[in-house]
Length: 451
Image (cartoon, rainbow, N blue to C red; front, side, top):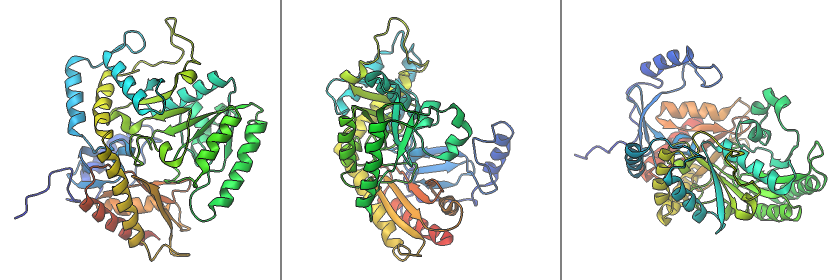
């Protein structure tokens, strides 16, 4: 008799159709106490998580799922990685909270040294934060201080966060619309040319727009001092840039004395087969923002740049110009150091690449009959463990419909793209080959129910 698999490496086990009665009851309670804008609540959505390990999640009804989202890409090593849990537990015995920019926890120094070592610059300096959005805010402020030019060039499809500075550089109208009157008007958007058919023409059109903006400035007339870009667009649906685009973009920015900000919040720490995805796509950044997987499951982000750029900030005279209460939080620093010990080995990077290839090839094979004009699936794409399945259907938010069908079968995925037309996968390296193959079968069936 085969021994049961440990939780973390199991295939789906559904005791009740999700969401079960316990999740439904929790949804009713949540509805009574949380802003209606935060969590989408419906008869068939969501499930409420109670436990997670490896690539498995267990909900309030005892159902076990394969998680292909890794908690929005955070759990790259897998949920509750033993090394990270041990580091958090040990640190909690000694120091839970410090005094940020006044009396720093000693662990912060070690983390900043590690971030310097993984960056492209030997003299790198960094500012720690809690969220990806805040890291982007820091990068935008740094670029303005360093160049004296407040204008920003961003890209269609880009997502950089929802605080006001980062929201101004986020393209999606759903997020921007209610707050347009508050947003900085000096942000210009250019096309983001993707790899695939028609890439050469798309690159030419993009560069015509980029050259004009770098020359003429933002819509409000401000000179452009920052170019903020994702090496692979995440929330837009795992959009991989056309070959050569990122290298040429870096050169154009240098010629215009603008700084390139690489938003690696999702793509960094090995998700795309390198510690920084910029390396793989030819982007040469002046600042890098990292987050999500950096904290190993705890809230942590950072903006990193060479000393010549970061020294645009004035020295502290007792009052930091940009700081926060939880700056360099000891538990988050401990978790990040433990995670970095695991991200660094080549085996993690190789697993990201191999597993991503397995998923893309399996999906392409399973959906081969639909990867044709009128077949319902436009493309399977991605880099490393950032994978997108773009659907072609007239129905609203088809990616959300697929996510719902997959959930019924015990697999967690999310929609992406402006119209919810992409099914996006951001799994952990803990996902086994057996789990990956099973998830591919489920997704092929779920897509067949929708398109």
